[in-house]
Image (cartoon, rainbow, N blue to C red; front, side, top):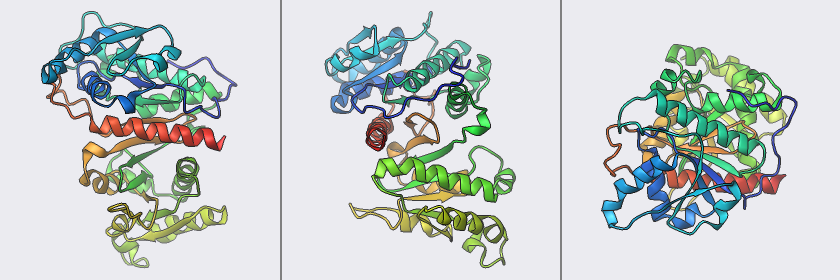
Length: 364
């Protein structure tokens, strides 16, 4: 499942006026529902967007949410990316990618749904790499459904990383990526993601920390229009307290910070992890002391952001030669088909994708 793009480079200078592709996610989950709600209730956010997915799945989702307001939400099948710009408001333009027949039942793990969801992501990634779309916004996948379908990747990040590497003619290891979780008040980037805690500690190396700082600097610069102010959290309590509570700060984190500074990056730390997120948080329109915090492992970085409100959180993959965002939640099979799913995080993901695409175009 890799692109035939060996030796090519990804499209540079993405035009922010180009359409944004929203993948429908797992059709058995809440992805199609929240997509339908966004097109119905936030026409200003979805202008110039279209769905890469299955029209029948989106029509089913539109029917589910119709009862809330009693107004039908039309689904229009488009034949090309360019048609998305002329789609009327409160209409879902769908570019048919593959097909789901019959539609999978709500809330049930399905290999069919997993494969269809992965195909939509692959199509959108290739369109972004070719420069046909400004960004991609991905509705949630279900990891078990992907596994049952034999996709070979546990989630979006790994799939997109492999696709980008194949397009660029590189090994996957040559296209390092990082996860950023962001909302209106706080951004965090993680050195490691989904690994056991003991493995996360082992991943706090000079190379991994420095690579994370470089990726963060390169990704946030175009978004902010200036060099980001990066704070680095320590791994241990009180950032190790000069070696009393651990030596990772002395042996790995601080040297990586110094190396980053020598390369011109605006980095400081390591700071005590129990206070640095408060210092970086922006409140009431007042910016925080830092633009982003680099955290050493998954829960250290994600708990502060999610505590501020999952409904506003946006997951951003940094390091890819394309813009990709997603809502900060999963497929929520328990809510699928009820019409109760909250689309707020998806709205924010679209807005962030648009800003990042515009920033990338300006920087090119």
